[in-house]
Length: 227
Figure 1: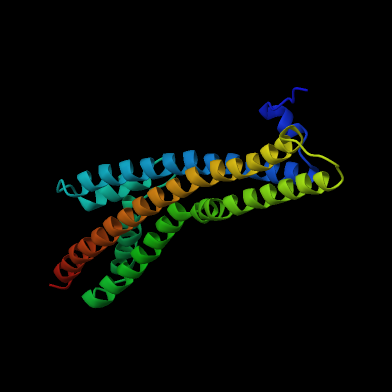
Figure 2: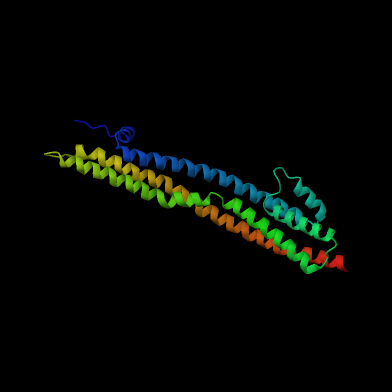
């Protein structure tokens, strides 16, 4: 007697626990891909904005003009522009109060830029932990579904006088689907996490380098005001 081994039939005939496992892995996969596409757009937009700002900054333009331009950005300054805006805003605030002691000015500006840098990195790293969790746990969740499915198959065999491959094949096949779904959810999440984590680290290094260079520029400006 022929046995229907189509994928849909195997999923529909799976036990309740295995179905729950499959549903959880399917939702995890959807969440993973949603984060992957969203994070890809964010990192690309941030990198592009930082490239454009860095080109404008080192073109030798007026800092006040660049500051006003950064403040007019739709949705607010982001990336390197946000760090610059925070540092230059603090510089203007302190010097407007009449405090032109170079060391104090530089320290306050550095503090403001460090806070902005941490805020930008946190924005880029948001949801990466979710990708890491999906990537590390999905194979085990799938394996759990596989173990349950195989256990159910052997329990069914215990009540039979004779067993054939046609009897156990559907149960084992539906169990292995859970493992396949776990890998399907995990592999893209792990690849995306490693890729995006590397890009975030590279952007953070760029931000930190810019902050140090801009701090030196602000220090020279503060010394000129004292002189």
